Length: 327
View 1 (cartoon, rainbow, N blue to C red):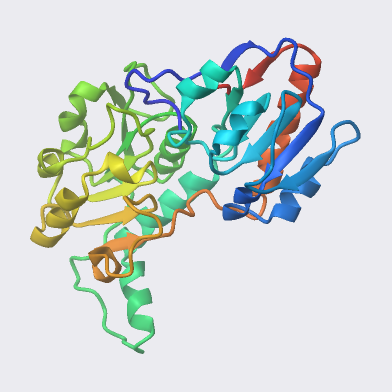
View 2: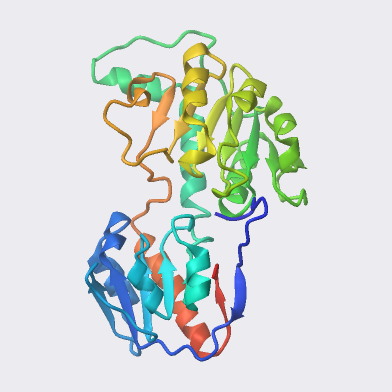
């Protein structure tokens, strides 16, 4: 994710891909964690560069592009590695730079999927849909108390991180009539955001928000950013939404905040351990919505990734800078 970098280097466009000659696109089997392997291979097929599936026993050379979900040490022998997620915190950027292997990510393609998921979370909390869904299996007709449901219109949302995903959240919540504030390192204005705070103003940014939506990357500065002190600054009737990374939130602090009513609830698509353990207290927490890191999921995901890879192949042919280069 991009937009709230807190000092970590991130390049949307970097140096030209001089002298790179891609003879093969190798689709690593870990891609299956996000989409069908065969669909990705088919979407990447073109007239010039052959595409094939590879496993952990594969070897690579300076003519290979590897498309992958997860990093492997062997990838450092390739010319270029493309991660199919927006986040690249699992990849050792320094090692890629030292090896001279280009690393690109998939930021920029989640501007619809993740924000739509966020709107779903907000709507569920406001209209109590998650409660009624839970009761449906028991044929339970019980209605929520009169003062439980509310409308999103007029409520404030604080979007932490105003990159592609954060901006998409801001656009959609503004369209719903919400009061949108945001947090970004630069403090620069953003479309459909009434006020932009800087990270050192995070306490003030969340203080009046009914919803706090985390869309920031995981960096040294953002790890553990949402701790007990910050949760205490939030309204007692507020909700935390995490579509960033699990470690941005301090686990025990959030669980305690949910248990003692410091905040009203949380929707989490990113977790501290994935899969979330069977005995984790969030599974049974009435005030939590848990999804298995699927906020970006769509039946067209392979097409979006393939279009990005193919664009960069064409950039290489033209000797141009690669899109989304991080190393």
